[in-house]
Image 1: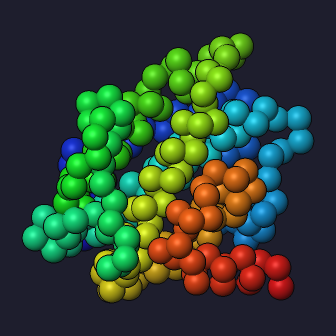
Image 2 (image 1 turned 180 degrees about the vertical axis):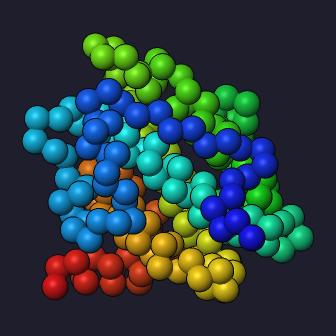
Image 3 (image 1 turned 60 degrees about the vertical axis):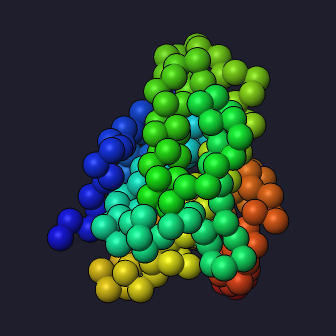
Length: 211
């Protein structure tokens, strides 16, 4: 079984911003132990470019993680997109779907991945040419992306962690999520209340990093 397969309806692309490309090439997120130094804005770099490259990097990672358990996440096993019994997520993109609708977990994740990919592929939102300007709404867009990517992590941990363990992927999942948490904390991308479904795990990771 391919542990890193992607969804059949989604093909991850890795667009890399011009001035960050060489920095990321040799620094895979799950291979770096010094999490906070990796997440911090490099000296002299533009914050929007740093947000852009990490948005793409985390998107690709989460796509691969979800792809590894996607065969277990079906409309029968996951009739709603949830993170435990207390948290249920409905889908809306503000364009095609303006009013939040209840979807199965695989439908929600597929819609999310397609939506994020459309943003990344839009040079007016994620510019790729040197000198092109980021839109004023870029930071807000990135916050929405990270808020929704967190929901995929939360769904995996609450519903599919046994599958992750059976595939011997818990170390990769924990490492990816740890870096995700340090990044969103560093740049205040996800509100505290949104992290509630994985509150204990988040607190333990932050505590371990301080020791």
